[in-house]
Image 1 (cartoon, rainbow, N blue to C red):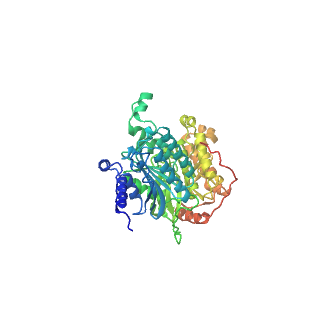
Image 2 (cartoon, rainbow, N blue to C red):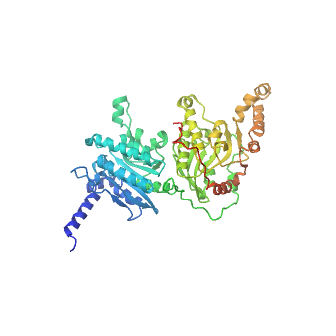
Image 3 (cartoon, helix red, strand yellow):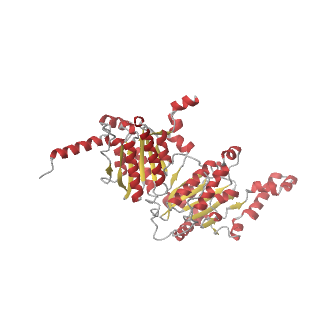
Amino acid sequence: MSLDTKLVADLRHRREAIRQGGGADKLAARRAKGLMSARERVEALCQPHTFQESGAHVRPGEKALPADGVVVGTGYVDGRLVAILSQDFTVAAGTLGKAHAMKIVEVMRQAKKVGVPLIAFKDSGGARIQEGVDALSGYGRVFYNNVLLSGVVPQIAIIAGPCAGGAAYSPALMDFIIMTEKNAHMFITGPGVIKAVTGRDTTMDEIGGAAMHSTVSGNVHLVARDDRHAIDLARELLSYLPSNNTEDPPHRPSADLAQEPDDGMNALIPSDPGEAMDVRPVIKRLLDRGDFLEIHGGWAQNLIVGFGRIEGVVVGIVANQPTVRAGALDIDASDKGSRFVRLCNIFNIPLVTLVDVPGFLPGVEQERGGIIRHGAKMLYAYAAATVPKLTVIMRKAYGGSYLAMCALEMGADCVYAWPTAEIAVMGAEGAVKILYRKEIAQAENPSAKSAELAARYRAEFAAPYLSAAHGYITDVIEPAETRWMVALALRKVLAKRELRPPKKHGNNPM
């Protein structure tokens, strides 16, 4: 007996209706705006013919909502299995109801069960109001599973449309948020509600656009030009991350370490210790081919964080940026740095810290805003991290900020210092005003005397050789030696194992 052709035809018809989502007209309208459909996003992310959908025929009751407004399943991205969900705005505006949430939760459970990253395309009008408390319950289950996945597998959210109200908390609970410049907004309350409650006029971009979230709120890690660029960024992120917390990141170690000095590194250092040094060229010369995926590039720019490779070994870079706020640590920079350090620790990514920090940013606003609590996050994150930690003190390293940038006392495995390093309780200019106040006041030329004493202070109290003599740093190295010294040290500590006291978890500053 052969299979009934009517059944085959019916199956094909149903599949095609599901693929059409909200219909040809709605799909065409999206493409006219430069937007991809939910399924096109999944297909662009995955290798051809590797995506397997689950729950395509799920429907809420008798109402015909194709795939209930969300595409879920698994596929391969650059040879690695990932779990994917993609909300379909053409079907009931991608709103979340009971069945919609059930599908999302099931694919999240699958990601946890097999230990693979989760990528979520967020494009939804929010809760399905007509489903009432069932929709709220659905969000609760999604948030709960976001937390269960946290620290187990990488979670990447791509905000490619509206993400409003409670829906915004799911990406906030994930590891990375990528947001497109146009057609995407993320907020808790919209302009209308804000106007009604506070009387203030505002715009969607002002409260929920990619530019605001990537520079002001710090919610967004990477900004994409469009859907395809967002997918490319997600792929690039995955290239530095392991599939789960039990695996190493995708290192590609070089067969032989190149140990030639890089004289170009020496040339980057200003002769005047008071002149700000841009750390970006240092990072570029340190990393293979200068490839650096910066995270949170538009927010708290006095600290730079991101991913790269050194002789094939994946590393997380944390670096002070003296061209912004003199590289001082403030509230936002502390939050940015501590979260990145914790993420690297979760996913077994070695940390390389580049130090040129004059201290924590002084000011009434910083103190009232809780710089003590926020700064403590940096101390906590580095001390709690058990991954390989290498530190290079390039120039300034003063006071508590010296410790907060992963000093030996905070668990660094190796600390190298350039001859230009200044390691001290405080900067030379401030110190001489306290130590030599009378000498300066009695001098014929107080400014010249201050400069003379500052130079003496640097030589006698802040030179790296003093710290080396006390065993506080591993070695003093020439800047030209930095890349191969770090590369060699990395190889030696990759197999590091560090046990901590048994506990449920620490109580880190929040």
